[in-house]
Image 1: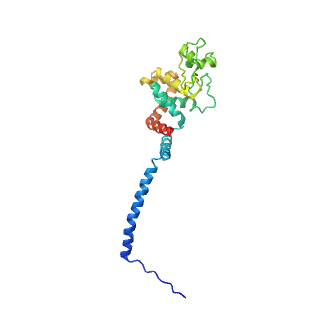
Image 2: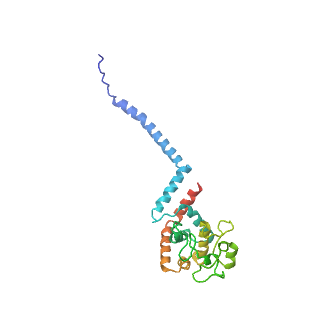
Image 3: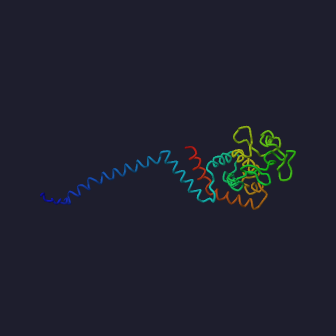
Length: 231
């Protein structure tokens, strides 16, 4: 029978030699892995993940997330009309909970995502307009840029399809921006513009609450969403 041979432990000098050999290798591997990871983080997929995480972190501060697909529209309307995109988001939140309500027609007759009364959309010079502004306006006339121009309305054909549709999200947001701009928001008189949108102090308070909340993240959320949208 073969006797078990006991392995002699490595001498201290050998152990130190092995360590001296492995340490540079370990450092080299670590450095290469570090720079490889840094390089990977510059890839579009990693940038997209980082931007998405930034968006989600910001949205945690809101009781209802701002749908990301709407933010580029708010921003485009801001650039055209000088109305803060966060104010448009606040109106959208209050009016129809970001278009999530079952019906986009109010009991008073306001229509679409931003809840325009027909007379405000097509213009109060329309012969049927009086009272609250429901009027007796045909769908064709309501959505006609020519009729809107004729009657002095605020409706806008934002996407250039020849129709100003209060139910189309782009047209609705641009129309709201147009209205708010012409009523003072573009000049900084936000409170007055909101009051003109709906003559209610409670309404103004609610809109301004969300406007101020969103405005704390105006640039960060705008940049994150737009960058994410381009990738």
